[in-house]
Length: 236
Figure 1 (cartoon, rainbow, N blue to C red):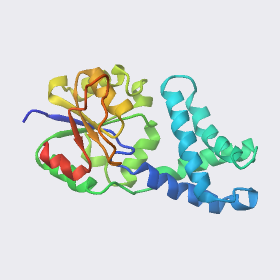
Figure 2 (figure 1 turned 90 degrees about the horizontal axis):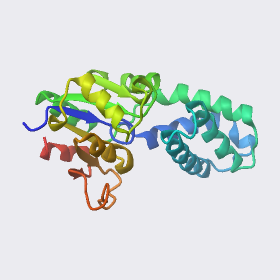
Figure 3 (figure 1 turned 45 degrees about the vertical axis):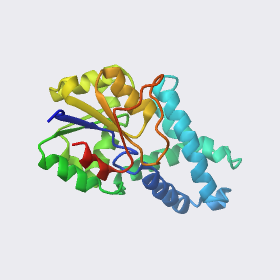
Figure 4 (figure 1 turned 180 degrees about the vertical axis):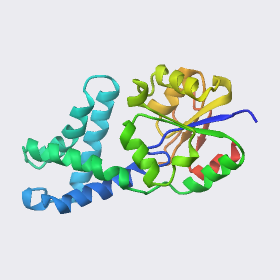
């Protein structure tokens, strides 16, 4: 077989970040009585949170902010949308959110099925994730995914971030894998697919949102594009 080592992204690819974060924020909304503090519309609060979270993650990946700022400012900015300038509340929400989020178990359809399929075919499965070490391992454990992956490479553990080449070099070395026998599977063109390209390895764009295929750089498309995890059976 052409590939021996399959490097998966976790959030938005296998573990449904949007569904799990919404579930967690809804629990915070209720347990911290945010409606009585002025957050009148949970759906709007959640939508705004996703926007702020994406922007702050982009700034974090580019080195403009530190992780602690990311963790509480996404709550702070979401509260400010409702004219709530309560920094202690935002910081408390940031801590509780990170305690609860990794306990969630919602996976994308066919996740367990495809991981079983790939393991049975003797592929070496690994993870490369921009998440935090403790948080990502907790997600894997609670969702029943830990035993599928031989190596779990986090941005915190590797001291680098996708799409930078260094995190992929670190992952290849740790997995004892060669670029031409490895492939990166992830949802993000800007992070996973560009990262694989930077590292000289093939890529699978896991396009859950069924967006039109877009070039990574210039006219270069991902090596493969699938619209559900089930379609990976057609590649491997």
